Length: 273
Ligand SMILES: *[C@@H]1O[C@H](CO)[C@@H](O)[C@H](O)[C@H]1NC(C)=O
Ligand SMILES: *[C@@H]1O[C@H](CO)[C@@H](O)[C@H](O)[C@H]1NC(C)=O
Image 1 (cartoon, rainbow, N blue to C red):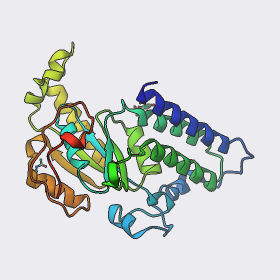
Image 2: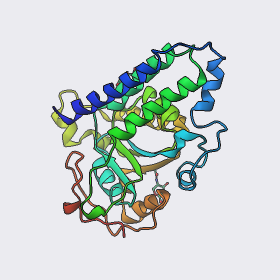
Image 3: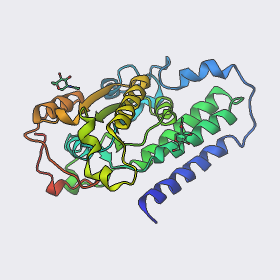
Image 4: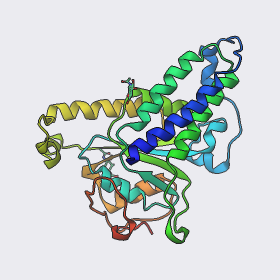
């Protein structure tokens, strides 16, 4: 089984568990449309760790206990380099692209929430928590030799995003941050070898539209976001990013990679020290 299939399998298993939540007797609606927001982590529930406060200061509730980070990239915008650099930052591990797997989970949750319209708040909250459990498990980092890295923040980089996925993050993973990665020079981006190989490569205009849409999606998410265009890649800029990620380290250089998203610490010579 390929990794993506495995992920989907695990996700479906988790969602079946979620389904069981709705197998029991239903309670009457208590006006859920309005109160659902209080379960999204942006409500009043005060339980939260100190570190959680630093990662997501505006987040409230139990869903805020786990920290996530996602790279929203437009493609051919240096996102593999960016991911490898972020993976040098203590406490964080990002996986490579998963072909929009989160979209599957997000779409499922949307349908479940619709079906659960008449359920109690507690039940809906449980659904959100179960979805978070699935994603958290799914993003379990690899084991690092000698424990050189202890991961607190999990996530991935991806170029396939849509509104459903972002809304899922807002609801179920409210203690999330985004890095928006794009290219200012869409003309150069359109001439990338990657797109040349494609039958219908996007022109500069199409890439410009893709970039604008992604920027709007990030803005609408309301999540803390760091903007990093490829043209701004430099050791000082990555150090600024490390600070934003809560790390004290500084980068000495930018590791230039185009390996299609795999992380290999042994061959990554940029370090955040
Ligand atoms: C986003 O993508 C997922 C599947 O990848 C799909 O289920 C969902 O309907 C899409 N949402 C929108 C708004 O297009
Ligand atoms: C590029 O980096 C500079 C210096 O940190 C920053 O002021 C500027 O806003 C960045 N440009 C973009 C488009 O993010």
